[in-house]
Length: 254
Ligand code: NDP
Image 1 (cartoon, rainbow, N blue to C red):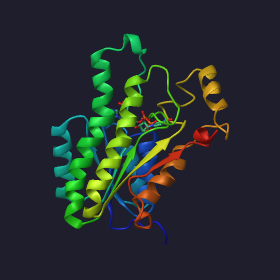
Image 2: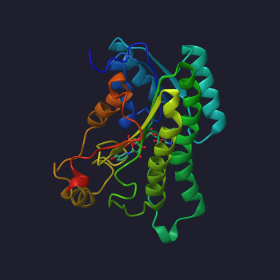
Image 3: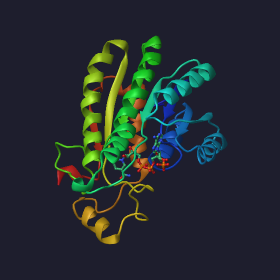
Image 4: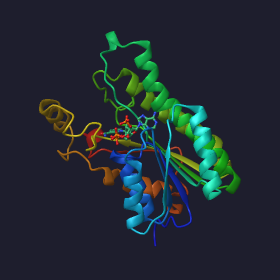
Protein backbone atom coordinates (compact mmCIF):
# COMPACT_ATOMS: atom_id res chain seq x y z
CA UNK A 1 0.00 0.00 0.00
CA UNK A 2 1.30 3.47 -0.84
CA UNK A 3 1.64 6.04 1.97
CA UNK A 4 1.50 3.40 4.69
CA UNK A 5 2.13 5.04 8.08
CA UNK A 6 1.69 1.96 10.27
CA UNK A 7 3.95 2.03 13.38
CA UNK A 8 4.61 5.76 12.95
CA UNK A 9 3.76 8.24 15.71
CA UNK A 10 2.48 11.58 14.39
CA UNK A 11 1.81 14.79 16.32
CA UNK A 12 -0.48 17.50 14.95
CA UNK A 13 -0.71 20.92 16.63
CA UNK A 14 -3.90 22.99 16.61
CA UNK A 15 -5.79 19.79 15.84
CA UNK A 16 -9.11 20.21 17.62
CA UNK A 17 -10.82 21.61 14.52
CA UNK A 18 -10.25 22.86 10.98
CA UNK A 19 -7.30 21.56 8.98
CA UNK A 20 -5.46 20.16 12.01
CA UNK A 21 -8.39 17.86 12.75
CA UNK A 22 -8.49 16.70 9.12
CA UNK A 23 -4.72 16.05 9.13
CA UNK A 24 -5.00 13.96 12.32
CA UNK A 25 -7.83 11.87 10.84
CA UNK A 26 -5.97 11.41 7.54
CA UNK A 27 -2.70 10.33 9.20
CA UNK A 28 -4.63 7.90 11.42
CA UNK A 29 -6.38 6.59 8.31
CA UNK A 30 -2.96 5.57 6.95
CA UNK A 31 -2.19 3.71 10.19
CA UNK A 32 -0.27 6.30 12.23
CA UNK A 33 -0.81 6.66 15.97
CA UNK A 34 -1.86 10.29 16.28
CA UNK A 35 -1.16 12.77 19.04
CA UNK A 36 -3.85 15.43 18.89
CA UNK A 37 -2.82 18.69 20.54
CA UNK A 38 -4.39 22.13 20.81
CA UNK A 39 -4.37 25.14 23.12
CA UNK A 40 -7.98 24.20 23.84
CA UNK A 41 -8.47 20.56 24.81
CA UNK A 42 -12.27 20.74 24.57
CA UNK A 43 -12.76 19.23 21.11
CA UNK A 44 -9.56 17.15 21.00
CA UNK A 45 -11.26 14.17 22.67
CA UNK A 46 -13.98 14.31 20.01
CA UNK A 47 -11.33 14.03 17.27
CA UNK A 48 -9.66 11.19 19.18
CA UNK A 49 -12.96 9.30 19.40
CA UNK A 50 -13.40 9.67 15.63
CA UNK A 51 -9.95 8.14 15.17
CA UNK A 52 -10.72 5.32 17.59
CA UNK A 53 -14.10 4.52 16.08
CA UNK A 54 -12.35 4.10 12.72
CA UNK A 55 -10.02 1.56 14.38
CA UNK A 56 -7.08 3.92 14.95
CA UNK A 57 -5.05 4.97 18.00
CA UNK A 58 -5.00 8.53 19.38
CA UNK A 59 -3.98 10.51 22.44
CA UNK A 60 -4.78 14.13 23.34
CA UNK A 61 -2.64 16.77 25.03
CA UNK A 62 -3.24 20.44 25.81
CA UNK A 63 -0.38 22.33 24.14
CA UNK A 64 0.24 26.05 23.70
CA UNK A 65 2.90 25.98 20.98
CA UNK A 66 4.21 29.42 21.93
CA UNK A 67 5.34 28.20 25.36
CA UNK A 68 8.66 26.38 25.52
CA UNK A 69 7.76 24.93 28.91
CA UNK A 70 4.50 23.54 27.50
CA UNK A 71 6.26 22.13 24.42
CA UNK A 72 8.87 20.35 26.54
CA UNK A 73 6.25 18.99 28.94
CA UNK A 74 4.02 17.60 26.20
CA UNK A 75 6.90 16.11 24.19
CA UNK A 76 8.15 14.42 27.40
CA UNK A 77 4.67 12.91 27.88
CA UNK A 78 4.46 11.76 24.26
CA UNK A 79 7.87 10.10 24.44
CA UNK A 80 6.95 8.49 27.78
CA UNK A 81 3.79 7.07 26.17
CA UNK A 82 5.05 6.02 22.71
CA UNK A 83 8.84 6.03 23.03
CA UNK A 84 9.27 7.91 19.73
CA UNK A 85 8.02 10.66 17.44
CA UNK A 86 8.21 10.22 13.67
CA UNK A 87 6.00 12.91 12.15
CA UNK A 88 5.24 16.49 13.23
CA UNK A 89 2.59 18.62 11.54
CA UNK A 90 3.15 22.21 12.71
CA UNK A 91 -0.39 23.38 11.99
CA UNK A 92 -1.42 25.63 14.92
CA UNK A 93 -1.89 29.22 13.87
CA UNK A 94 -3.98 32.34 14.34
CA UNK A 95 -5.17 35.03 11.98
CA UNK A 96 -6.18 38.16 13.88
CA UNK A 97 -6.24 41.03 11.35
CA UNK A 98 -5.26 44.54 12.45
CA UNK A 99 -4.65 47.53 10.14
CA UNK A 100 -0.90 48.05 9.87
CA UNK A 101 -0.92 51.65 11.12
CA UNK A 102 -2.82 50.68 14.27
CA UNK A 103 -1.10 47.38 14.98
CA UNK A 104 0.33 47.25 18.50
CA UNK A 105 3.55 45.60 19.51
CA UNK A 106 1.55 43.11 21.57
CA UNK A 107 -0.59 42.17 18.56
CA UNK A 108 2.52 41.72 16.40
CA UNK A 109 4.26 39.63 19.08
CA UNK A 110 1.24 37.37 19.69
CA UNK A 111 1.00 36.31 16.04
CA UNK A 112 4.75 35.84 15.63
CA UNK A 113 4.95 33.89 18.91
CA UNK A 114 2.22 31.44 17.98
CA UNK A 115 2.66 31.13 14.20
CA UNK A 116 6.45 31.29 13.90
CA UNK A 117 8.12 30.74 17.28
CA UNK A 118 5.66 27.91 17.95
CA UNK A 119 6.83 26.08 14.83
CA UNK A 120 10.49 26.63 15.80
CA UNK A 121 9.97 25.26 19.33
CA UNK A 122 8.03 22.17 18.18
CA UNK A 123 10.30 21.44 15.20
CA UNK A 124 13.46 21.72 17.30
CA UNK A 125 12.22 19.34 19.99
CA UNK A 126 10.71 16.96 17.42
CA UNK A 127 13.97 16.85 15.44
CA UNK A 128 15.89 15.84 18.58
CA UNK A 129 13.55 12.87 19.01
CA UNK A 130 13.52 11.96 15.29
CA UNK A 131 17.32 12.07 15.12
CA UNK A 132 17.46 9.16 17.58
CA UNK A 133 15.85 6.93 14.92
CA UNK A 134 17.50 8.63 11.91
CA UNK A 135 14.03 9.13 10.40
CA UNK A 136 11.57 11.98 10.62
CA UNK A 137 9.09 14.13 8.76
CA UNK A 138 8.43 17.75 9.72
CA UNK A 139 5.59 19.43 7.84
CA UNK A 140 5.15 23.13 8.48
CA UNK A 141 1.93 24.87 7.50
CA UNK A 142 2.45 28.30 5.96
CA UNK A 143 0.05 29.98 3.51
CA UNK A 144 -0.18 31.52 0.06
CA UNK A 145 0.02 34.75 2.09
CA UNK A 146 3.72 34.38 2.85
CA UNK A 147 5.54 36.84 0.60
CA UNK A 148 7.29 36.31 -2.71
CA UNK A 149 4.19 35.02 -4.48
CA UNK A 150 2.13 38.18 -4.69
CA UNK A 151 -0.56 37.53 -2.08
CA UNK A 152 -0.86 40.21 0.59
CA UNK A 153 -3.85 40.26 2.91
CA UNK A 154 -5.30 43.37 4.46
CA UNK A 155 -4.53 43.63 8.16
CA UNK A 156 -2.12 40.72 7.97
CA UNK A 157 1.37 42.25 8.18
CA UNK A 158 2.16 40.11 11.22
CA UNK A 159 0.50 37.02 9.69
CA UNK A 160 2.30 37.18 6.33
CA UNK A 161 5.58 37.86 8.15
CA UNK A 162 5.08 34.77 10.27
CA UNK A 163 4.20 32.62 7.26
CA UNK A 164 7.14 33.88 5.19
CA UNK A 165 9.36 33.22 8.19
CA UNK A 166 8.14 29.62 8.26
CA UNK A 167 9.30 29.08 4.66
CA UNK A 168 12.73 30.60 5.35
CA UNK A 169 13.17 28.60 8.55
CA UNK A 170 12.08 25.39 6.84
CA UNK A 171 14.53 25.74 3.96
CA UNK A 172 17.38 26.22 6.44
CA UNK A 173 16.48 23.40 8.78
CA UNK A 174 15.86 21.07 5.83
CA UNK A 175 19.55 21.54 5.03
CA UNK A 176 20.67 21.07 8.65
CA UNK A 177 18.49 18.02 9.30
CA UNK A 178 19.02 16.13 6.02
CA UNK A 179 22.07 14.26 7.36
CA UNK A 180 19.92 13.09 10.30
CA UNK A 181 17.33 11.41 8.07
CA UNK A 182 14.73 14.11 8.68
CA UNK A 183 12.87 15.90 5.89
CA UNK A 184 11.32 19.33 6.37
CA UNK A 185 8.68 20.62 3.99
CA UNK A 186 6.06 23.35 3.88
CA UNK A 187 2.48 23.36 2.71
CA UNK A 188 1.00 26.68 1.62
CA UNK A 189 -2.78 26.40 1.64
CA UNK A 190 -4.93 28.81 -0.35
CA UNK A 191 -8.48 29.59 0.79
CA UNK A 192 -9.61 26.57 2.79
CA UNK A 193 -13.03 26.15 4.32
CA UNK A 194 -12.30 26.10 8.06
CA UNK A 195 -13.52 28.11 11.03
CA UNK A 196 -10.55 30.48 10.48
CA UNK A 197 -11.61 31.84 7.09
CA UNK A 198 -14.63 29.76 6.23
CA UNK A 199 -17.81 31.11 4.74
CA UNK A 200 -19.18 31.50 8.26
CA UNK A 201 -16.60 34.07 9.33
CA UNK A 202 -15.97 36.16 6.19
CA UNK A 203 -18.43 38.66 4.68
CA UNK A 204 -19.77 37.50 1.29
CA UNK A 205 -18.16 40.38 -0.63
CA UNK A 206 -14.73 39.58 0.83
CA UNK A 207 -15.18 35.89 -0.01
CA UNK A 208 -16.36 36.65 -3.58
CA UNK A 209 -13.39 38.97 -4.19
CA UNK A 210 -10.96 36.30 -2.93
CA UNK A 211 -12.48 33.47 -4.96
CA UNK A 212 -12.57 35.62 -8.12
CA UNK A 213 -8.79 35.13 -8.28
CA UNK A 214 -8.94 31.35 -7.79
CA UNK A 215 -9.25 29.43 -11.11
CA UNK A 216 -11.28 26.65 -9.46
CA UNK A 217 -13.75 29.28 -8.14
CA UNK A 218 -14.25 27.53 -4.84
CA UNK A 219 -12.62 27.12 -1.45
CA UNK A 220 -10.59 24.02 -0.77
CA UNK A 221 -11.68 21.45 1.75
CA UNK A 222 -9.38 20.59 4.67
CA UNK A 223 -9.07 17.00 3.38
CA UNK A 224 -7.59 18.28 0.11
CA UNK A 225 -4.70 19.69 2.15
CA UNK A 226 -4.47 16.55 4.30
CA UNK A 227 -3.69 14.53 1.17
CA UNK A 228 -0.52 16.60 0.74
CA UNK A 229 0.29 16.13 4.44
CA UNK A 230 -0.01 12.34 4.11
CA UNK A 231 2.28 12.32 1.06
CA UNK A 232 4.97 14.44 2.74
CA UNK A 233 4.73 12.28 5.89
CA UNK A 234 5.23 9.07 3.96
CA UNK A 235 8.24 6.98 2.99
CA UNK A 236 7.35 7.74 -0.64
CA UNK A 237 8.34 11.41 -0.10
CA UNK A 238 11.88 10.31 0.84
CA UNK A 239 13.62 12.61 -1.71
CA UNK A 240 11.49 15.69 -1.04
CA UNK A 241 12.90 18.21 1.43
CA UNK A 242 13.04 21.99 1.72
CA UNK A 243 10.08 22.25 -0.63
CA UNK A 244 6.95 24.38 -0.42
CA UNK A 245 3.84 22.79 -1.90
CA UNK A 246 0.96 25.19 -2.51
CA UNK A 247 -2.51 23.64 -2.32
CA UNK A 248 -4.52 26.56 -3.62
CA UNK A 249 -6.88 25.67 -6.49
CA UNK A 250 -4.49 27.39 -8.92
CA UNK A 251 -4.54 30.76 -7.11
CA UNK A 252 -0.80 31.41 -7.54
CA UNK A 253 -0.81 30.27 -11.17
CA UNK A 254 -3.53 32.71 -12.22
P1 NDP B 1 -8.43 27.00 12.80
O1 NDP B 1 -8.54 28.31 13.52
O2 NDP B 1 -9.68 26.30 12.41
O3 NDP B 1 -7.51 25.98 13.62
C1 NDP B 1 -6.32 26.38 14.25
C2 NDP B 1 -6.29 25.78 15.63
O4 NDP B 1 -5.06 26.19 16.27
C3 NDP B 1 -7.44 26.27 16.52
O5 NDP B 1 -8.01 25.20 17.22
C4 NDP B 1 -6.72 27.24 17.43
O6 NDP B 1 -7.35 27.41 18.69
C5 NDP B 1 -5.38 26.56 17.60
N1 NDP B 1 -4.41 27.42 18.24
C6 NDP B 1 -4.41 28.79 18.34
N2 NDP B 1 -3.39 29.21 19.08
C7 NDP B 1 -2.72 28.10 19.48
C8 NDP B 1 -1.57 27.90 20.29
N3 NDP B 1 -0.91 28.92 20.87
N4 NDP B 1 -1.15 26.63 20.51
C9 NDP B 1 -1.82 25.59 19.96
N5 NDP B 1 -2.92 25.72 19.20
C10 NDP B 1 -3.36 26.97 18.96
O7 NDP B 1 -7.52 27.32 11.52
P2 NDP B 1 -7.28 26.55 10.14
O8 NDP B 1 -7.57 25.11 10.28
O9 NDP B 1 -7.90 27.34 9.08
O10 NDP B 1 -5.70 26.79 10.00
C11 NDP B 1 -4.72 25.79 10.24
C12 NDP B 1 -3.39 26.34 9.74
O11 NDP B 1 -3.49 26.62 8.34
C13 NDP B 1 -2.97 27.65 10.39
O12 NDP B 1 -1.56 27.66 10.58
C14 NDP B 1 -3.36 28.71 9.36
O13 NDP B 1 -2.60 29.88 9.47
C15 NDP B 1 -3.08 27.95 8.08
N6 NDP B 1 -3.78 28.46 6.91
C16 NDP B 1 -5.16 28.47 6.85
C17 NDP B 1 -5.80 28.88 5.69
C18 NDP B 1 -7.27 28.80 5.52
O14 NDP B 1 -7.75 29.23 4.46
N7 NDP B 1 -8.03 28.28 6.46
C19 NDP B 1 -5.04 29.38 4.54
C20 NDP B 1 -3.62 29.32 4.72
C21 NDP B 1 -3.03 28.89 5.85
P3 NDP B 1 -8.22 28.77 18.96
O15 NDP B 1 -9.45 28.61 18.18
O16 NDP B 1 -8.46 28.73 20.42
O17 NDP B 1 -7.41 29.94 18.49
